[in-house]
Length: 494
Ligand SMILES: [Zn+2]
Image (tube, rainbow, N blue to C red):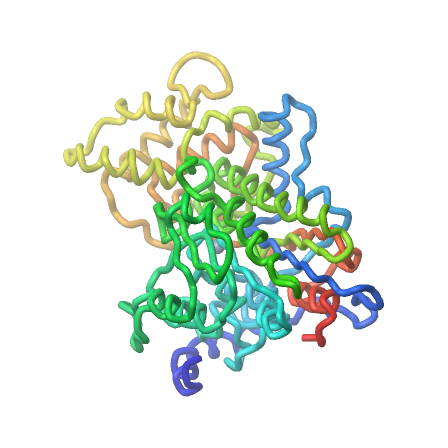
């Protein structure tokens, strides 16, 4: 924890914004609603799909039913949970929340400001349910498909005035003493971007008794002790690859979850395990429905690991699945396709928007400094996305779609940075213009629309199964989630 004076300096401008935009807190969970009088939960799972609202869950389910199950309905595991609730997500100083404020709400049970991590609007540190579990002798694990110092995981172990203090967050991670951190890597472990570097966080972790493993075989064979593990290949922002780009050489989110269960369940007093599906959010920021769907399915596969554990320990396990906010304004229905839905066209996409931009378009740009030729794109559109420039069928591009692609191609080759507030920003966000136009057209052909490159303010779905799960039915605020969890764990209220 840094001194208060520093907090105040850094947060000064944020507090001014807070004064301008104070939002009312959501519905408060009444004491009588809380779970009482039963055996305490010994094994607690909290799964957070970042950017995962009902549209993301539904899109994944429709895709699975059509593509994998030959048209007959296939439900996601999380959608079959017996308790289903609706959760409001607004931050203290902004209606549309961000992952830091939402993570803090779900970790600590308080409304705080945008970008704050584990502190209240006055910057006082607030205890998280993960820290409470640790202090009660339980084992604690934190898993994420994005970097482990990112806002959502950080809210459970760090207390900082802004999510951008990655180095300070990595030091908080080591000092938390939690048993298991896994998934993505670290953005600034040595403090290169810090004004107050405190040494190499990974070296400090070793001195605190952590093993640090990136090799898959070594990871699979690890049998006990404190562990920090991240995948060797971290292609963007120190995060795991998108599920659509993942190979068997990678350690995936499901494997990180399974190992967490194996290690934490060795503790006789039980465990608290938080798992974040962080790249659902990143795919939705970029309006890439296929990558979002594949990452939602990968997240659901991780949840299935917890469900298997629950089947062996049904009397003292609880599993909660929620999201921190919706992202992208994804919806199922588009003006160009009216009432029809053609999710089968989505199966033609072979890679994420990120991989197409980084490995295909960036190379093409480098090879064609003179500006290239749009005709060169036809075989790539066909191979990577199934979009055809001639012939018949739902994937054949209409004249106006080809014209839009051509315009985006020129914008890509020009290479200018798209500025917020311009028409180009509404068309492409801050992403590669051609890649954005391709995924927009493919998504629209499936009957999927997007309204934003940011988060949205719609409430999200929370699901629960196991001991005390029934208190997660109904309509409540994200700050109620940890309050409900601690009541099931039998701890003093937050
Ligand atoms: Zn986001």
